[in-house]
Image (cartoon, rainbow, N blue to C red):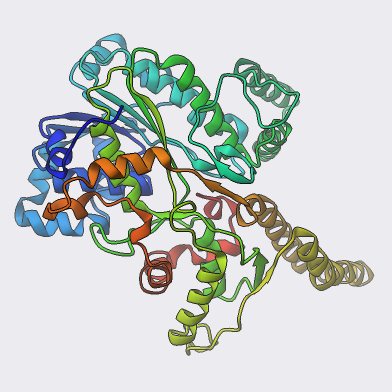
Length: 512
């Protein structure tokens, strides 16, 4: 049941509240922390759970990775010289690790920590598509379990909000509903998922690798491959969405007596307007292509330009999170899932992004010449199917690589270093396409009826000047304007140090 509210009550709800936030050093976490502090400076405390050896180290991480970032610019302007004192008063660095039971705290620490918490927001996750299975399981599965267990020990708790992803639905077509996962449910007919057995498999595999004296590199590779293998066995595309689905299952199974909201965003992009347009951090799915095209390290990619690309600005996700918490704060039996998505009410095709991108780079050519001069970029080529792209790559890349390999053998290894480098790049691009195919060729649309009802309740007070503080209606977005004037400039402004990652590091470019 959604409670009656107005916009004042949304900001007012957080007054005098103590809120535990996990994942505050991530992109969405920073947007959330800044928003709460800006719209409700009378919040009592934000406890930010940070992995660190001690409180001083945790405080330093918050200063460098959270409050020191540009998204806090408006808040700094509002408080002026008093900003540091304000942050000191409102933010409490809390040393802990969601991968450990009780966050690694002893009983006395746990009791002291839990007694004042009103709200828990679990945004901690590893979002790498090709993460080690043990790391992803510890964070996305056991982490959710440990957060839920801690929530039940908080006597004042009014709400547990968990951030998941809309893509736990897998590669479905048609309209995808906002429904929970049952324990053991999979996406492949005839299979049953036993989470405890998955944990046992991880531990058994690691023991065997250690017994065989495997190097760290071999262990890392084996755990990554195991994650993908298990995910695909049960019908999920990658380790990330597989483990996020298992995390949801555990929460559904364990949350009884704890009011809970699950937020499932689609691909999260730069802020639309709040606190200012175009802020972002980290290379996300579509940004990989933008960054690669800007540097001319990627001249083609996989995408059906007629398909819908479901993206949602980060500030809209945070607004939906905050309104959802208020709406269900009085319902101790609350249990609801929200798709925070755009494909149902304001769908944008990949063609809109590519047209906006080509126009933007034509009007604002990047400095890619040998001497730093601006160079007009060629249009990017897109392939509608993986089969057509694989054929193109085989002819234009794989065949020349094989020829270079033969020449290298003939010349006694003269080109060995070059062969290794080109092979690495080819394997990386192949993996990138394999991991992204389920998203760029996705044919589903996310039903957001629950979120629409939430919007209707929020919109009852249309004359309130503060309504824009909590806007999460994708219908207000002009996608061409957003991509051209907000998102693409944001990618280029904030991601200069990461643009080279499209040809170097798969970990940095496999995020949702």
